[in-house]
Image 1: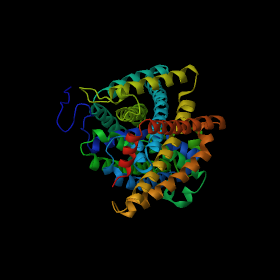
Image 2 (image 1 turned 135 degrees about the vertical axis):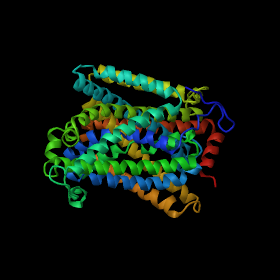
Image 3 (image 1 turned 180 degrees about the vertical axis):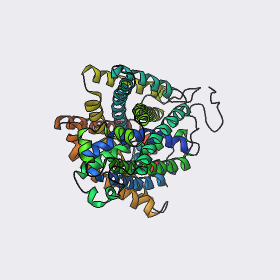
Image 4 (image 1 turned 90 degrees about the vertical axis):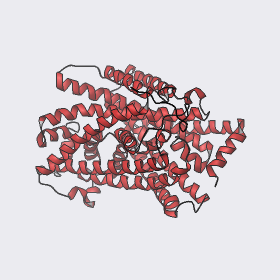
Length: 481
């Protein structure tokens, strides 16, 4: 494979600027894992949330995240590095809060990565068992996947983008085939728009439905993490973020509506409660073909792989950014001289996730009901907190520097997004014990998130005391006109 040669606009110590809007969208939508959400999360939303009204959950959450994207895009031209949340929070609230956000972000995505790697092994085991009858331990498949992810993460980002693009196209194709099959064949009771109505939305546990919907959008905000590898970041990042939010919201809302129509709005809740894992594959068999059902099982495993690969890339780039700034050892911020990848940070990410997975195996935790549910739920809460904090930081920044952008883009939209996200966080916290499994575990995982932010903020204070001039310069730069 040809290597990327140095050029004057892209020094050897930096990552390669090779990504356009399509590649970044592929990676962040792959992390959102469309097939995983449609086949795995939607049935849980129906069974535990607001029943046949689940499509509007995605519309509502998508609207809130579009508000977030307005402010996110407005401030992007003023952000010079790929620290994503930490850089945005630093811009509005200073370096102490910025390092707190960075530590919380690393913890959040690491939790999500562990969760997805566990489910990846379980989904791969199910696919192999269904197609061949062989019984392979889930942890062996997780280990093989982590090794492949480590290889891709070590090399140039374009290789990851190509892999993710191919997997994403395949899983979106099978989801589209299911949606089209249900619509063309009229569903179980005829096609109806009732699942999109307010009466359907407000039935059952709306908070639980919204909580699961937020989980489905995980990854959209990671566009900024790839800033250092974008060809024209001031244009590419905002476009990729808007595209990702609209694509995710549209795909999920349409597919959830199709699933409800396919099962029948009068019986979908019962079917989802009886067999949530089998609901969507059964619909694929009924409305498309047996081949589609088999393909869905295989693509469900590859969907988790795509999600895990993107999460790995996000964590390693956070660590790379912190290393390049001196907040972590400088060696972590070195790019590979040939692949121009964050190879050291990638290796550290692989080692940390591998250790966590080994612990879950040693303790005998179920890969889906325990590892995925616990770690994924904690990661979802961490993401919501980061989004709310980032929106607040953007609004404060533009309050200090009015006139740079319109009031709507700089203050009103991010302010509304922050308030909305705080409300969603309250709903998630209220339902957190249900998602995690017990009050004790909910407090434990919640404590990990809080402590990670406090640890980062404390380190920021220590660095401010040790190097006041450098820290002051960064904070002044965050708010300079």
